[in-house]
Length: 135
Length: 135
DNA sequence: TCCCCCGTTGACGCGCACGTAATTTTTCAG
DNA sequence: CTGAAAAATTACGTGCGCGTCAACGGGGGA
Image: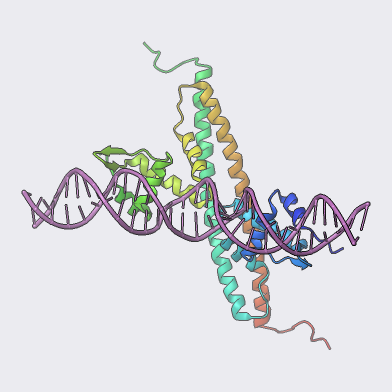
């Protein structure tokens, strides 16, 4: 059941180019095995690509994404390293929470602006009592 | 009460460089008035800078930010234009909502990973009944 | 008045995240 | 085995968001 994907499989799957996958490998985000010279991506690689692309959509840089991916597969044998990973994880967590708060604020403002524009439009469409007509 | 800010005032206020403010002007995000050759920013400009920087932190490009800022001060006289602005606003709104959802998913995963790492760490610190000792 | 420092205006540079073109190598169906 | 398509390698190019440097005012405090 060990399914493998070629570079084109993954590229088509996520609507990216092979160049992008090779670049992610260049910066250490992926380490596909090789059969001869060809890269073979497994299920774990596929999930990582998914996470990388989500990170990009959210505005994170590739090094930042690397940090977060490191959290998922941290070496559970070294205690001090484990503590360090936990600390960095909490840091990222707070950063993400702050980003959610700012996005929520932006969302609320967009809603308010939409409602305001909608009211202006409604007032122009059915002007029963346009203001300034009391003369 | 018309308070004005020099380019350095705003730069220091937001911990950016004057070059950044000039760049935002180059791409049409700001249009400060001039006294001679010097730029003078008013309160509205200051708020716009604040919104621009929040947009950047959230991963939006400068053109995307320009689109959103255009929503706030849309011309309320042209009905067709108003409809168009509302449509683009709703589009941005859905985009922001999708981004919130993805960010929330990332947040949940970070929480889960933190808890998992914490449990591993706890198990290594007080190993009362370490598994594999039942022989 | 003079000088100095802040601001302005180009213009080039740079790091990131890839795009793209050329060339070479590999693979695999027939 | 062979030929052609796909993958790999290498290297340069690109768009964005500024950084940086040089050269040039101009205005305001001593």
